[in-house]
Image (tube, rainbow, N blue to C red; front, side, top):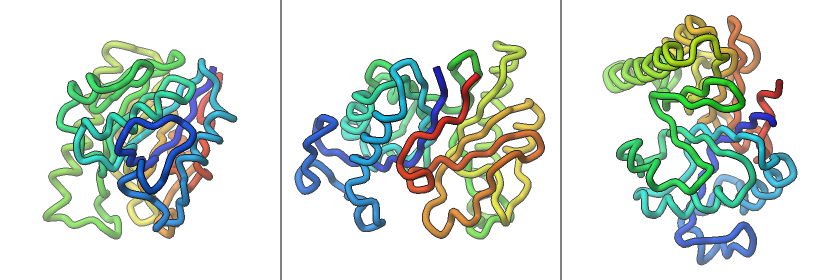
Length: 244
């Protein structure tokens, strides 16, 4: 049993579809071909089937579906559910269908979980999550518009880690963020301070695509292993991030 990660699937099915035989002109509302992701769902499917076993866990930190409404996002959830492994998901900046954790969780097929400002247990590890936000000092940060959201998201990660520490003392911790916790321009953040405080071992994140991937920081940072797992950064293939 191992833990894999893959984020930013950016699916947009408009009806129930199987893993194979997808018609890109009839079954998809927002093709990613314009970004060079030609029929990327086929790549995800093939790599996933080659890599992930039924007993494995896959972390999916955000931007799973382009859907604006939950009833449409269900088509994307159902497609993912046909792939092997347990799936643990958390929100990204394009998850507009998210109105509440309760409603999203009620819409999920078996074998799929949604965490946000809380945690679950996988392979004996605490998996905690929140969306994250643009960091102070980053190239796209605007103090007037971003400060409140950034601080709220830091607070949501603290809620998750406080709860995990109280209820699961001593367990190793993994954090899922959509936004990076540090970048080449913002090398400190409240997210990193919390992860160091709670001795988080691993943080997986997405959000950075194309040229923006140059801002990514990966590897061990003050004891926290950082991994960028956006689809296009890892060849649309779930990457193994943990195995005992």
